[in-house]
Amino acid sequence: MPKISTEQIQTLRQSTGVGLMDAKKALEEAEGDLVKAQELLRKRGEKVTASKANRVTEQGIVESYIHANQKVGSVVVLLCETDFVARTPEFQELAHELAIQVAATGACYVSPDEVPAEIVEKEKEVIRAQVDSSKKPAIQESIIKGKLDKFFAEICLLKQQYVKDDSMTIEEMMTSRVTKLGENIRIKEIGYFAI
Image (cartoon, rainbow, N blue to C red; front, side, top):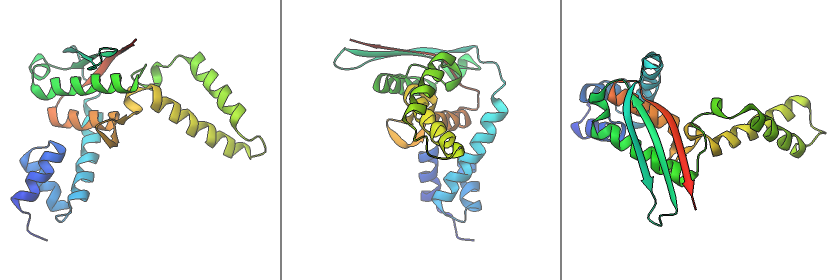
């Protein structure tokens, strides 16, 4: 097994936000490969997020963002388990990043579950009209599902690519922050305003 340097550990910590021992352990398991170590930490983060998903989130903050042109703005209500975490710079930074994301993309809903059924059905009708009817039904359904996923990625915050790092979605970013902060974090509500 290759020797893990402190520089490698620091690089992994800075890119993922995990603790010193977690970074070291992931690098050891990945035999010094930074990309594999990041993937291991991401998988662990998903497990941690799933285990914390049922915890009650009653504390948090309301964050707003007004773009420099003062013609676009957003509001995000971000919740966590404790007031202690809500007051941390990391949590407040996350809320601010989410508010910027909403202002930049015009997201209307937090997740696909919130999109009204009639809007989803109308979108499916439009997509069905665009799909080539000579294709096999299974292929047609696959195309409809793909286009519907793209539609959700446009209007649902959690499904969007993060504007500051398009290698991850907002959902993946939230998972990494839950791991880092050690509490369940939930976006309760968003609002987008434009002139």
